[in-house]
Image (cartoon, rainbow, N blue to C red; front, side, top):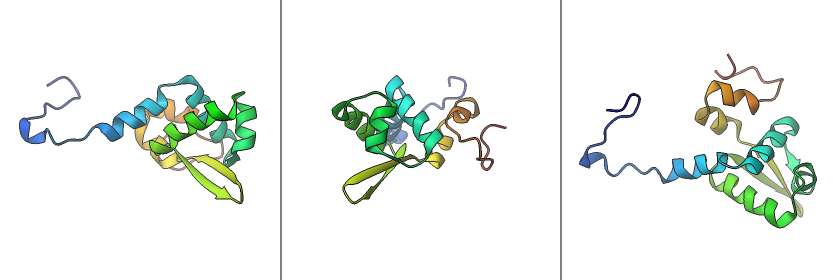
Length: 116
C-alpha cells in the first residue's frame, strides 16, 4: 500500500475512475481555472459576459464550459436565449483541498469546512 492509497484486489476492479478523471481533467487547464475563478467572484454569469471576462472567443469558451459541465464543476441555467453559468460550490469543496478550495470561494461564504 502506498501511503494514502489502498491496494485494490481483483474484486475491486469494478471501481470506475472515469468520473474522477473527468473532474480532475476539468481542473487541469489554466483557462478553465480562470473561468472557475470568475464564476466564483461574480456568481451566476451570462455566457456573453464570461467570454469578455476571460478574453476568449465563443467557440473556445464553449469547449471549456462543456468540459466543466460534464465534470459537474459548474451548473448552467438557460433564460430565454442566454445561458448563465455558476460554480457548483459543493462539488468544488468536495474535490479540493482546503488550500485550493479557498481560491474558489467567495468572500461572503463562511459555511462548510473549507478555508479553516
